Image (cartoon, rainbow, N blue to C red):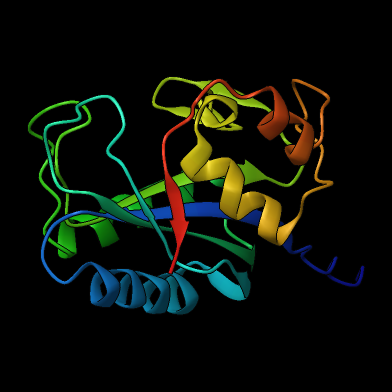
Length: 167
């Protein structure tokens, strides 16, 4: 009988955002669910207040990036994230509309995935200051596996000038 191969943890970066209700508490609750159901959170950025993206006639967001270690495959992780969002009151009524909780997979190790309903790395992260600023706090030298640039360089090249205020 062969020994069972040890499972390997994957470093994952998720973005959390909320602009409805008690935003700070919602992010804390989402982090607890992630830690319990998806993987151990090993680093978290500060909270940042940011302007809404895409649809600007809504309340500002609180955003945070978390780095975790997971054994879940990307599809199973996405399914669990969707459950957490729903349990926290997320309703998908309009693109870029207000939300109690939005959790996006930014990076899953160095993997590149382009499947229906699942794109990793997140296809727009390099265009969004509210993602790049907290990512620089956690890992400025992390290389984007498609663009082959570090996070700090992506930020320097980013044309998004929206306010990203550390709380």
